[in-house]
Length: 418
Ligand SMILES: [Fe+2]
Image (cartoon, rainbow, N blue to C red):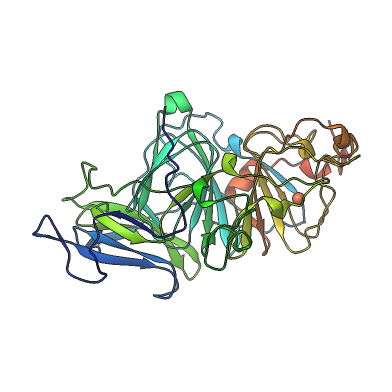
């Protein structure tokens, strides 16, 4: 059984392993082994960053070649339709052993700010770095270890794992025969992802009353110098990076292993937040979705809908009332349980719904009318709302449920639904 420590705060300053007493000074370990300082920083040298101390020279490249990312095309969602994507249908054989959590992702939605992909993996990934933006990997099921230049984080079902841009890392599924395959929804941002400003003081500390706090974030244990292959041989890193036409892939080779870090400090590093650690705020009547926000990003927000005590007002409607998100496209990933608002629509565990702007959505008629009598909280979903329209990736076109738009009325262009 894995032990999941919650031992530090994030996104706060941390110092891990050996670092010199001052920045930017010569630093040797064990008296005579030199280290090479690397700064990983946002917004030029004017934003959040960390300093890492390597045994190898971080820029020692020996090769670079093409990495085929697969089909990255995006198709407009027109004519306008809500969508139900049955992601588990992408791999009906459910045989994950030949797949890893980096190279076998399939893109199902995207725009200029974010791409969303899905993967069911059983094999260790190669080293990987996303130079386009930060990633949030949401773990639907299974367990894994995230190893990175910053150290290791043990990851479990329900984790939102934030991996900053350019962090070299790899995903190692744990005991697939016991935990099942590592199923993950991968949010690939074009910019940065951070906890909501509204929950933090102007200095960054989480406020009293915030549904999430520093104690809820799990951070890297490290550094990883103990990894047996940590130094001394040429090492490939798969890199997703920007290109004029969108995203591109390359495999770059260093003359050493990038996990050769003896220590680091700063405020930029990966971390994990589990939905079970979110403390929902409940009202007399239903609180709106922003109550459940866990991250903000450039062009989108992320919420975790978690089990909650039910609203207690007389006649309170306990499923989301009908709403038209005039400024955003809404993506829901139903990762566990059953969501009352979608009852009767065919939505199941592993499903994704897309409810685009310019379209009103909500529960089916029966669910709305029955909800004041609800006694069990049923919400359990990962939500991502974008401000630019989303388009459909190849994976969406491969698992789209064509009758979903008509499930509210029970009647579509071909007549009554079966
Ligand atoms: Fe909605």
